[in-house]
Image 1 (cartoon, rainbow, N blue to C red):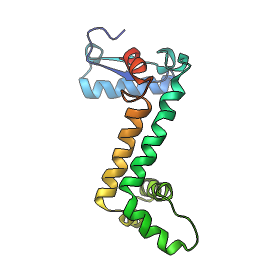
Image 2 (cartoon, rainbow, N blue to C red):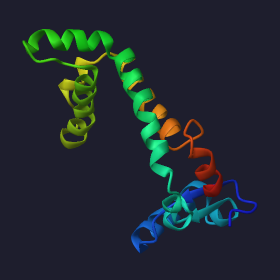
Image 3 (cartoon, one colour):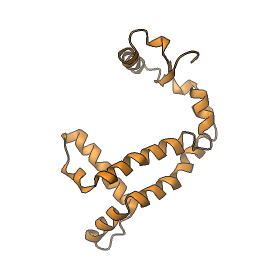
Length: 151
């Protein structure tokens, strides 16, 4: 139970995951972390029991496509020109943008990232805010119930 604690942190029940979460909490809150936070296993919180859970995730898709077409409108036009007959879409621009973080993690730096402006990177971050809120949070038709049971 969450009780008097300020927040709930989630971890699977695998020993290595629980120990990692406990070490994080000890570093963040101190060795008395259990007074400030609870550690929950999402598999036992009811998330997977909700038969309408996928509706929340699916409801976010239209909002995400709309946001992609807004924040990547200019970039999509610029990337469409050199592709010839290929119908380059905002989704293609987004998928190209997602390559940058992977290449940066793998190589430490990516010149490819400079293809996108600072504002487009802000839009990229906001995309995931929408995904979280509309797919699982308070903008989701099922998110309020799931968020409530998770703390």
